[in-house]
Image (cartoon, rainbow, N blue to C red; front, side):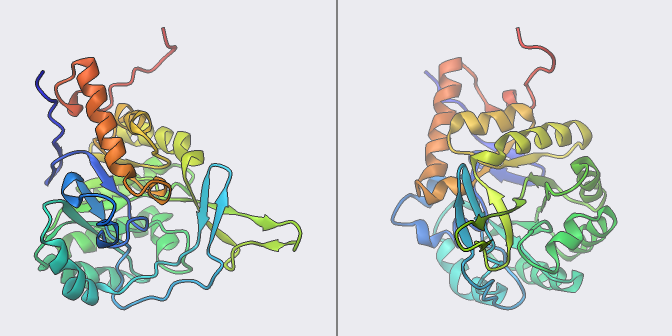
Length: 309
C-alpha cells in the first residue's frame, strides 16, 4: 500500500505534513526534545516574540477548567534578539519549519520584530499575534478592529518577504470581517482561533483565581466553536487556513480539515501528552490509509452542508 502524501502548501509556505505545535504551548521547541523528534513535525510556532524580553503577568496565571485551561501568561518571552542569537542556531539543526509568532503593543513594535526576523536564517514564516486576550495593549486592539488589523497586516507585509500568517481572535462579533481585513492587508495564511476570554472564581475565597482576573480559554471546550469559525472563514476568504482549538486526536484535527483548514496546530494537548502533535499526525495518516485517500488535500473543506444521511 502506498503511503498517503501528507505534504501541504499554504500559499508560499510548504510543510512536510499538516501538523504544527501551537504558539505558547511549545516554548521554543528545544524544551520538547526529550519527548519527541522535531524532525517529524510539519512545523511549530514559537512563543510570541516581542522587541524586548517580557516577564509576563504575575501569578497565579494558569487554572485548569473542566475541559481545558485558562491562562494569562502575558506573552512572557526572551525577546526577538535573544531568540535569533541563542535559540535559532539550535533550531537550524532540524528540518521542521519554524514559524515565529510576533507580538507588539504598537504597530512600530510589530514592524521591528518582523524586520529582524526577515533576515534570520531558519525562520520559515511569521505568525502575527494580533489576537492575544492576555495583555492590555496590542493584541485585542488590533485583533478586534478590522481597520487596525488591515493596517498592521499591511505594514508587516511590507516589512518582510517571509510568508505571513495572521492569527485571528474569536472574541469578535463576526470573524469573517476580521478575516477579510487580514486578507486585504496582505496575509498569505490565516490561523484560527486564538483563545476565548474567560474567568474562574474561587468560591471559598470569593475572589478571581487569576491575578489578572480574566484569561484565555483553550482546550476541547472551544473546539466546536473553532470548527464553526473555520467553516465560516473558509467560505468567506480565499486564503489557506490553519485550524486551532482543542485538538487532542486525529478526529479533532480532521474536523478542522473537513471544515476548510489545510493544516492544524496542536496546543493545550501538549500539556497532557508532550508528543500530542505526533499522535495527531499518526492518526491522520492512519485515517487516510484506512479510507484509501491519497492526499490530505482531498479532504480540505469536504464536509457537506445540510442534513446528514
